[in-house]
Length: 353
Image 1 (cartoon, rainbow, N blue to C red):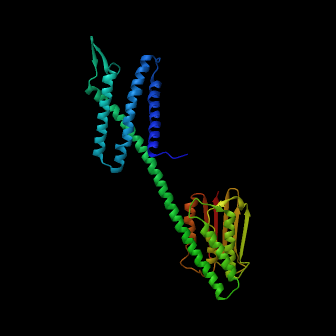
Image 2: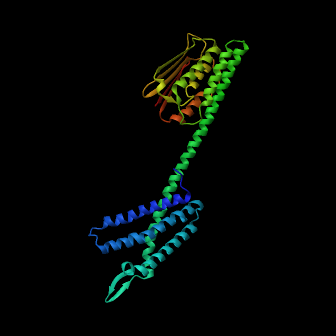
Image 3: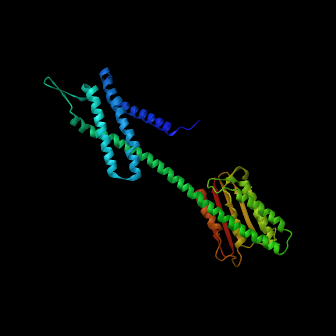
């Protein structure tokens, strides 16, 4: 379906507002009328609601297109008040001319004084019309302010979403850089001793980087949980190559991982932290990783024995990074518990689907 032009959209908006306006005018009059609808009453309703209601609508629509939107841009009260006064005067003059020339007895006749018919003068009509037109302009102001608030609220949400995406992209880049530096150090260590496993480590790193680069920096994006598990397994495989200890990591996956999705790259910082600050080369104290995919939530835990001396006294950016990303992506739908003693370190992450 082709999109409407600006003129077409304005015609549609004008028509829709006019129909709603007329429905309100006639509806309120019919609801307040308890007598039988005689031809005289119907004539009065058509004059007051139909003809003069249409003039009021033109006043309403003009105010929504000109002085109020202009005021929201420049915030100049004198111009707004002058424009509103001009609209009121013009509307009063048009209504009086129509009433005087075509509906004098229906609108302006006030009764008889003895045998002389008494009509409403222009100034009398102007005084009553001033308040009537003011109410129409107040309705226009409410309409403009309401839709201006809706547009501003939409704009704020878009800006907030863009801010989230930018922050998420920065955190993802920060995590990728951190991980790449550690991985290259591992491969460098293998290359120093001329280990034949450096080829496998390089291939594994290539697969890992391909997966990382393929994930868009969008907070609403979700990857398959099975892909994330495979990514974790590749990461662990490379760490096993680095440490030379195949039994130093125990990873168990239970549940139906193929039926769920997760924000990518959220789990590996916990595993990386265990390798970086824990004991990862002693089969007696293995790093234990557990992932359970239940029908209501994902539960992921990492437990490792702590090294007597921390490898990085200043701490890493991994866990701080992942906390920020969890806040951005899952809000109140996650729980993260971290327990640390002198001997071990334990992280438990629960994400509700």
